[in-house]
Structures are given as structure tokens and as C-alpha cells.
Image 1: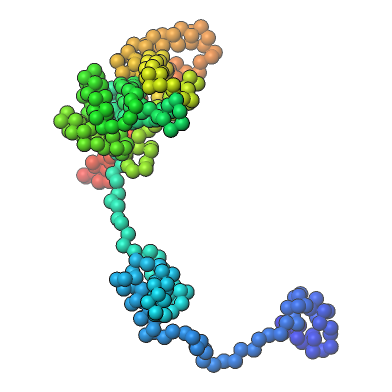
Image 2 (image 1 turned 90 degrees about the vertical axis):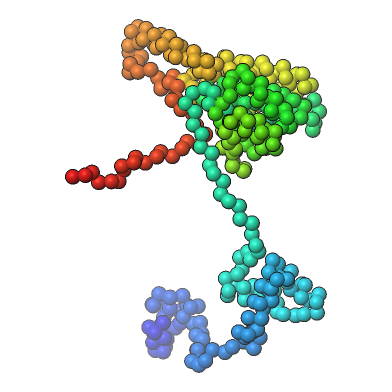
Length: 335
């Protein structure tokens, strides 16, 4: 700007002078504000420190501590009192870092993550209830389904007209009588799952109860995944004509799933083969078939190992437990 003013003082036009120094003409010709040094002027309407302390005391009083400034302002006016404007209340609160929630907030303890591991059938059972659409809108049947998380075998599937803890207990008694008492029974936090009748039965049988965290569907993955398999099946109807129809369909579907469906999570075996210990013999027969094919068509095989998809995982888990550090990890070896 100094160069521009010097050129302008020598009679050069403002346009040419601006072009020479490389600044816009409007910027060059804009009048500058001349600031006069001196003490800053305090606005006449500014509230002093004493007044601000009074505002803070009022909004934090027992009557108003749970209310936002707009509510405090209105209640004070109704009581024939004017303390300050709503924006001033916010400014005072902001100065004291109280603009965020000042209410007494509920503190919920952190829920423990359920970590369950099964190394064989009959150890951990997961169960849940899903709705089946009835003959008319608003009418539903309840399907109680319990699954073994290791073998993926559906140990029980029952359809009732309603949901209750008593019906869940009847289901468990029948299942445990057939398949034995498990070590752990896992479920979400539905009313039937957390009912006293279910809790009493599992306690009497010394079965560990496990529950999902609130609003965490991933904590019950086996039941949720099976319900998706059920409802996305091509044969699953849009509605069931009656309770008997729903029971018939469920019995047929579960039988096919247990004995015909090859599950990718258990080495492409059927849940029944894994649950009843038949998968090992099938693995031997499959290996013999692959060996014969390898001898006949060696160019089609790049390895002598069986495909990984045919292997059965050693463990099944819900929320895989973190690996425990070695006892001597980080310690220096003795000299």
C-alpha cells in the first residue's frame, strides 16, 4: 500500500497505480479506519461482576438447576421478576463452563461383555424368540428356538400363541431331558429370558446364565443368524394360516436344517453330523474321495491338503475372549 500511495501522489491514475503494485483498485482506494489509541469503552448495558454472580446463583439454585435458561426466564417473568435476557444467561453460563447439561444425569454401569467358548456339543446353548406373522395383520405366533453354538444343531423349536417364561421353562425341561444339561445358556434380555421362572430353573440345575448387553444384537449371533436363515428361506411364507400351520412348517424346516443343510461354519457338515459325532467319519470318507480325484486329475490340484472349508473349528465362541498374555512375557531371563 505504501508503493501505491507514493505512485498516486506523483499524479499517476489510481487504476494504473493499482495495476503496477498488483492490488485491486477497490482495495487500494478504500478508506482506512484510523484507530485512536485509548482505553476500551465499556458498553453501557454490560452487567458487572456482582450482577453476573447473582445470575449464576439464581440459575444454579435448587428451583432452577435442572431447567434450561428459556424455562428459567419464563418462570421468573411469571413471578414478576426480570433477571436478565435469555442470551445473557447463556453467556454467564458459558463463562463458567456450564452451558452443557447441568442436570443430574443417570449413570449406568458398564455392562460386562459376554465371552463364551464351546469346544464340543452340549456345552453352550443359545436361545431366542421370534415372531411369525399370523393369518391377519397384527396377529403373531411366537417361535422359541434353542441352538447349540458348537454344532449349530437346533436342539428345540416350539411355536406358541404367546410368549411367557413358563413356556420357556417347559421347552428347556424337554430339551435338557433329551440332550442333557448344558454348562451355559445364553440369551438376550427379553422378558421371558430374564423371567424369574427361567432363572429359578437354571439355578436349580446349576447352569450358568448368560445375557447379551442391552441393545447389542451381536451378543447373540447364533440365534439372530438362524432367524435370518429361517425368514429368508424361499419356502418361508408371508403369513401362516393358523398356529398348527406354523408348527408344521417349523418342524419340517428344523428337520431339514439339522439333517440336510451343509453349514459352512462347521466344515460343510450337517449340524446333526457334528452334534452326534458323525463328522469325523465323514471327513475320512471325503478325504478318500479327494485322494482318488487327485490321483485321477493331478493337474486340478495344487496341494495335497484338504480344503480349509472342510475343516471343523476347534472352538465356537460368542465374543471371542482376548488372548491371555504369557505368564513370563516381558520378564528378563535369568542369567
